[in-house]
Length: 391
Length: 134
Image (cartoon, rainbow over all chains, first blue to last red; front, side, top):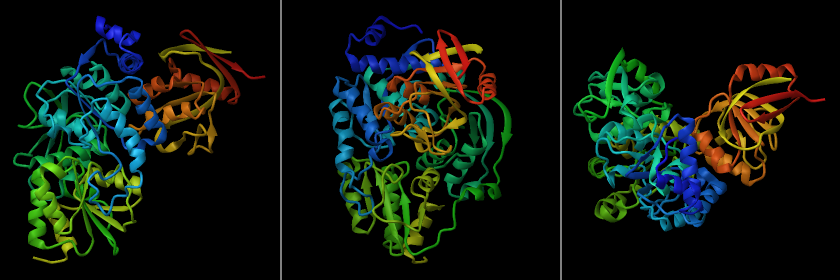
């Protein structure tokens, strides 16, 4: 692999042990994937920072590489941790708080912006063609598909290594020649009456090449976020080209196949039968945008407080400050708010019979992580079902 | 004796008794990082041995599990796979476990099985040598 003089110095250890180790990770992974050079990045987003998923040794690795002198060389954000940073939530178990600090404290020390969110694009929106090194599959697919940023799905240590060096390997989706849509998916209007997470889960499972989707005009940005996250969870997708949305010049098309999902097929992706007395409604996977919070507040006002179960909403850590009034209003109406975390990477205080969520990604992971039944529903349907009032 | 080519991904010495798991492994959920054993396959353990398997699948937490194997002194001596994907490579780099891609994986598996799994494997440069244990 060709390295610049600066990159070689990093690798040789002239910038310290941590930078050398980080550079070694990137060069080795890059060489194995056939990269000929590295590419400079403008934003790293580190996933795999929740103590409940990476455990003691993952925490030790992050601590070692940072405490031995690692500092971020580019703008860097981090994914949710395993605890509710607002202290508001009665549902998320905060007993691992001290352990989570073992990861958070050194990361802050290294210069990471402690956003604890899976929607880092709300802190720095990528420009078309910008090179990024992001972990977190739902953020990666959003950056590539909506903004035309260039990033692969990096694993936790690789995104961390990219943050500490400012470079990543130039392969995969960093090269325009690999950003080619092969399968055209036509979405008809009737399909869009279903929870959009089902469409995402279907795309992830059934389409393997890079898709090009038509028929999503007028769909809300937060619904696209949900659909993309679901496809990235059930499949390996990192880019879905969306007609009239994905910026021109950041992809090519060479369509060889055409598919049109039917409602009857998507119904198979709606999850389990939701019954039982202890039902949890969950919205915020990926984390909610301010528009979604407004929508939830409006719906709860119209349909009434959650009475027939609890309603959990997860938000970026900073929203408790910048959207304080809205967050407090939701809490006053009986909505449980957790900031900087989500149930995929944390633990519950209690066991639920079933989880009702708008997110296909949450459906995919909550079944596996918590072994609980999960059903997909629209945001309005969730609020109405929990309030128990038919209007 | 069987001999074939290997591609070095993470450099380092590689020799020892072979543990063959002819499938895809998800390190997160299927490997016990404290003991160096596979929970899904009759608890087969690979601590200090040459672990041969097809490739990895599943969660991006995998690199941290591989690192955990090293920290708890339960890591394999080296790993030989058919396909090396980024998660596995990153894991082996941070855990300093030598990693190789077999030139002809299916032939290697057949040879290991022909020796009734009782084999000793050595990697010398770009060459892999397989001996029957006596």
